Each structure stands twice: as structure tokens, then as C-alpha cells.
Image (cartoon, rainbow, N blue to C red; front, side):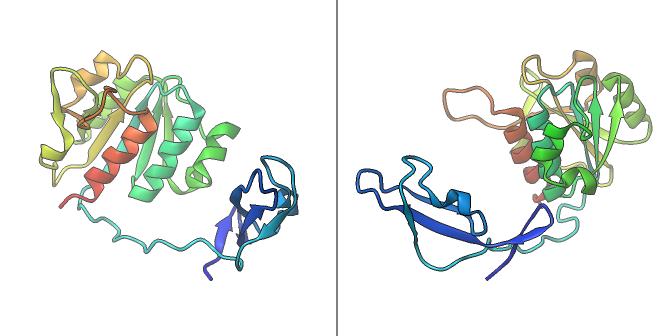
Length: 219
């Protein structure tokens, strides 16, 4: 068994199945949570299916598989849930720092911390009131800035060469209005994820996760 660390605690899990023939729901829960022994759908008795189990661990990746120094700027991301998810993905992809600009909520907010699941303590973050000023300062320090956005400048992220030898800042923008035009003017490239369905874009946290892993794990 592989123990799962949940908020500092080692936990095991169970599979239970509803004994009501009209329901038959099968679900998982933390083994120590006896409140979940009643069926969550119909409240009937349930039975345990098999032995306790733990979450399988994912092998750690090399420290810097793509060889680039990667940072992120969030331009006026409104949702605390999206910021928390982005922090968690940043931890997984080895992002060095996250800049929270404009109205982007800080990890001091409970909803951000709840979604980040501790990533707010493992990823360096910094609040910046003006994203344009922050981007101009980063350019002066030698950073390359890329915007994850659509529009006429947008290039397929999987077809562009990585800026080896220079640190990269990936900018993602507001869920409704996108990236501030002043920030876009600071970015050397605008990159996008190719879309094959009817929707023109992904949720900002999902798009960020796909993009940052594509950047990190490309040769």
C-alpha cells in the first residue's frame, strides 16, 4: 500500500457499494470517515468492496527537464479557485515564481489555499498592483515574456521554439477580458493551445496547466 498524505495526515481509502438494489451506487471514501458508510445517493446501508487501498505515487521528474527557468504572471485572474489551481499546477511543473497582478487574489485567502492544497507554501509568489509595470521591469531584467492568448499574433504553442538561455515568464489573463493590451505589447510572443472542438478556449486554469507542462517537458 502507498499512503496518501492529506493535509498532513496519512490516509487509506475504501470502496463501498450500496445494498439497495434500486440504487447500487459504488463510491470511494477515506477509510476513517464512517459518516460516508451510508449511501450518499439514497442513504441506504452499504458494504465494503475489497481491502483498503492507498493512492499510487507518481515518480518525481527531473528538476528541470526542459532546461528553462520558468515563471508566471497572472493578470487580473478573478477566481480564487483558478488561482489555487494554477499554484498547484505551478508546483507540479516546477515554476519558480508566480506574480499575482491586479485583482488576482492572494494565497492568504482561504479559497485560494483550499484549492492550492499547500502549493502556496512551496511556490514563491509575489503581489504586483500593476501588471504592465511588472512586465516592463521583468524585461529590463532579461526575461522573455510570452502571453497565453488568442488573436492575430497567436502561434501554436507546440510549434514554437523554447527560448533557451533566457528565463521565461508565461502570462495568463482575466477569465472574461483576457490579457491587458499593455501587457500584450510587452510580450515577445503570443502562444495558444490548438482547439479541435466547438469551444474557442479552455478554462484559464486548465489552459495554464496544459501550457506550462508543454513548456516544461518539451525537449
